[in-house]
Image (tube, rainbow, N blue to C red; front, side, top):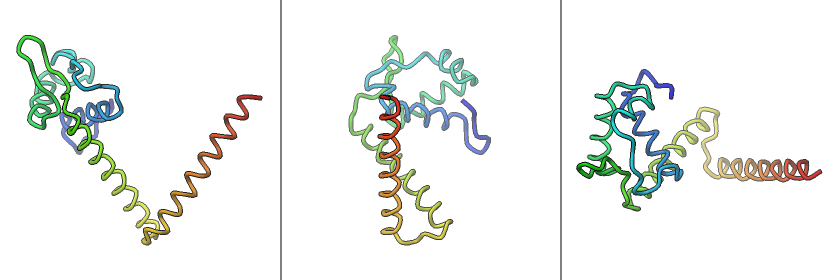
Length: 133
């Protein structure tokens, strides 16, 4: 993972883990690696890895069982909140970008999204038909 110098490393690791939670790569109740293994996996200092787990626990993204390790939360509401937050961030980025390009009307943006969806679906259909030939 490449880190952004403008953001704390522990937060970037937490964001990566939460993305993996939402995409199903880390299902509810999944055991997380030890602090040492997390540090190795992300090429970070073990103190930073320890902070990742402390912060995640405070955010209710994980829980620790003494002697067993740290686990991803099993609370589905937490997953829903994470997903909703990620959707808001994506939409915010999209709308800001569209405003930069001069699009301010949300109906116009919605029409562009519909057109994009239709073209990408049509492209996927034509890709599939090419594979079948």
